[in-house]
Image (cartoon, rainbow, N blue to C red; front, side):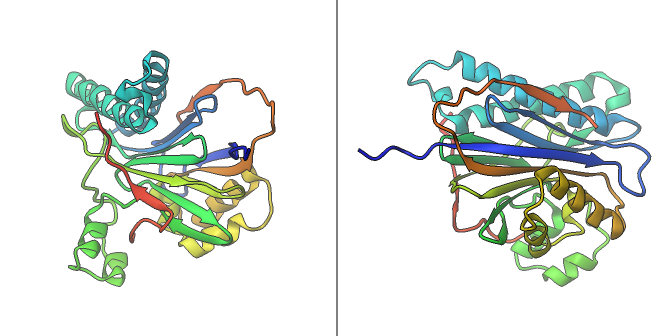
Length: 284
């Protein structure tokens, strides 16, 4: 009898205010017990962006855990894709209501990108232009599609990538958590292999580094935390005009008999998906 390969995730995360901003509106969080990781990039006046991103991170993690604990066998919520989608909807509701109820938080919102391990699969969700990448055998491919004006113009054939790169509309996004009553996330799923990496990052990083440079940084054999810090320093050396946040996950073969302790934390500080990724339509 052939035993199925069991995978686990090692990870590191880092965030930086960057070179130009006076506060950090990015947030990241994780629940290692649920294998759930998330990065958000907030927007809004005063500290509203910071509030929105932190609120979205916390709500996503807490909602996902609630749905996992209360899902009966055979219920749609027993599928990770559905739990992740419902948790994103809940994050949107909570951020939206907070912005509507408090004038100081009016019009706040945030991007969101997250990944959850499901056995040997990764399920990725995103809203906005924070990205997920799959790194495999020295290559780096973008998993998510940016919900941004320029990226959509390029995908629709109305602009070239060179025209988009020269545009002053880099920060205009077309979808975000908390800016409307309804939100439309994208979900992707993939089968993972040992030694794959998954990178979640805000656009403060991805605006300054292309996939080839990310792959090179990850292939140094350094510790995950050192790679995260190196990615951030690259972005800062090239201008660092925005906050910079990343979570780097390394796929490893799980030790047999290992017992995992659940922990959770929320730190509030283009193209097509790769061949390995498949778009997924939830059933809820």
